[in-house]
Image (cartoon, rainbow, N blue to C red; front, side, top):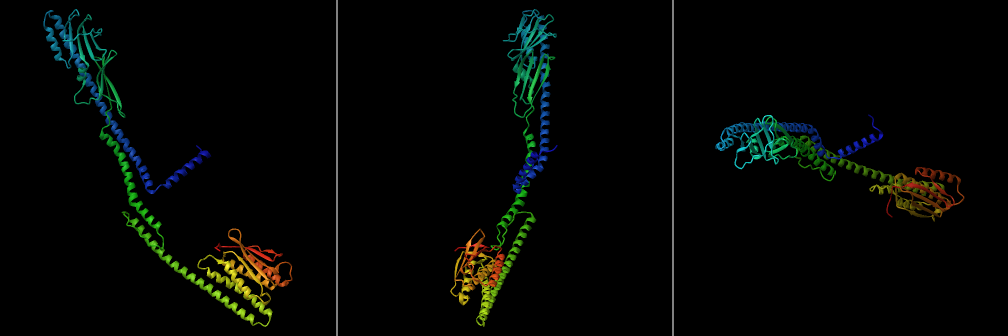
Length: 533
């Protein structure tokens, strides 16, 4: 049998849902379910055995009750047979006695004393006339006799049973009447349960001798019948298979209770003795923050030695981590001091080099040499400014702030300007942006190269602007009035200038935009963070 794509999809979805719900359960409910399912077959087997045993016991008790039906039928048979014998003898005695004989009273007394149950009697003569009868008894007209010369008839109201005897000519000889109460008393065996129905049937009529059976749920109703008077009457008993006794209920419920108890005990052992201590360790470890306080595990109430060792292992690990973190912090602090010292020494060395270049520039014999020393000094100053600003921002680790860097760089450029550019002005419009050290070096060199080229070309005004752009970037623009248009410039100096600024733009991973009509150069740079003005 193959599954279609839809069936496979539904099966996978159902499996995924069950897996998700199962994985979302805590370990305690999972363990309770596993133990319950593992013990369920044993519980079912025990329950089936208990129910089967209870049913067997119930059926056996029902058979014992039904067996008493024969005893009841024998009692009634004995009553009828004895009545037939004594009535025939009494009828013969009445037929032989003269009409005025007082034998009737003695015979009626003897009939009543010889029977198992009280009844009323009537004796007839050979001609069928009534000779004597129990006081207050008016015998009914009996039905016709059967082959044995007898008739058994239950009254229409089911309250009496009439037994009639006939002679060879079909003339009635005697009639006996037994009430329902007397027959019910006779059929009851003392010492037995009375919760049954007992009825006598014959000729399409019925006499209810006992009506004490009440059907109840889960109780099986059984019935049986026994013939009386050679099958001319039937005695039927109806009862329930004796309800399950309290001991049977206990036997049936005992496996269920044992199954539940086994699951709960297993869950209690696992949950309270294992899972709860583990959850305690998990909470303490989760709330632990290295450096705040040592890990303090509470007293674990668990007999499992492994859990105690696990807690001790966690404690040892946290102590080791705390010790290593302290060592790392010390190493970071030493590294920070070392980096600060390196930057400080680089800055100092660059300033020494700039001072030496300044001294050589002042002592040079020609203006060309002085200009060369000044040009080199400006670039060394640019590097020194970057290191100084990077050193200042090292504590916050936000990068190099461009606003103070370009401001300081502009001041140095005006201070080192040649005599022909002493009146040059530098205007700044710098936003509060931060960049990495590599970007800061390239920006410093780019500003220095363009500004120096402008001052050598007779610039009167240099404008430096840093404006925001797309997220994570800003645009740096430098506008020099002497570079606008097609003014006269040294071709060699111009070629070198173009190569340098193009190379710096590549280092910034950006394209250099030129606006020759205004003398503006702009480039997009990557920024780290935008600060506050």
